[in-house]
Length: 258
Image (cartoon, rainbow, N blue to C red; front, side, top):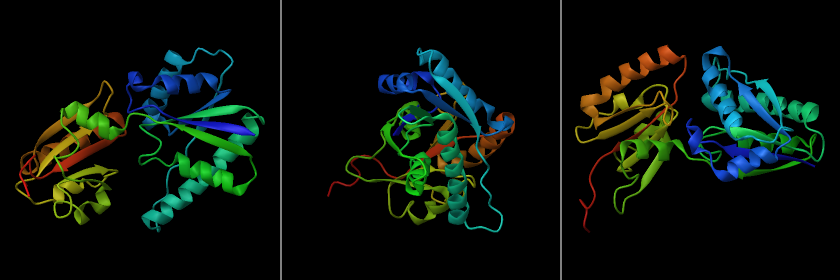
């Protein structure tokens, strides 16, 4: 049976990689390196840098593969993601059949942590469900973008005794500021924060966290919203891609003593 290591590598800083992750990469027979096109070549370069630093097993084989773009025209968000996952799972299946003999192991390097807003687990499960390739897998946790964000801003994730909601830009208006005092927002291509009209809200935003290109901005939302929008657009234009996250907060520690 083939074995797959799904390895969290943090948010771009090679020093985020854990000893457990390094051991898994060196135990693999094959490491698969994805490519998302020239505009996102840096994402592949980070993975290659990690391998150059930490993989000392000269027998490891490196196999590159292309990741298709998600189609959005004439599809709902869920339909588009479902089709995309199905397409990638077919690519994974072919990679395993062509490059991973039975009883060997392979590794995927996953940005951040495989269990937080990443689809590798779901895609591997689709391969398993088709039963054309016998495999099992394990997960090596990584530093999440949430951890990197709060560390860069030097803030705790939660207010004392209060919940935190992790959501997306599409669903932000459902939870903040009415439901949760703290909302962490992932996958927001529309800058949903700019539509929040609350004079007491604060934002802690970060892009390219953990890398040499890291940008962070914090302040009262009404004061820094436009600055974040323009900074984000300039950075995306400069790099050809952007990976960002932010935390919205209203209230303070101990302001509810009931």
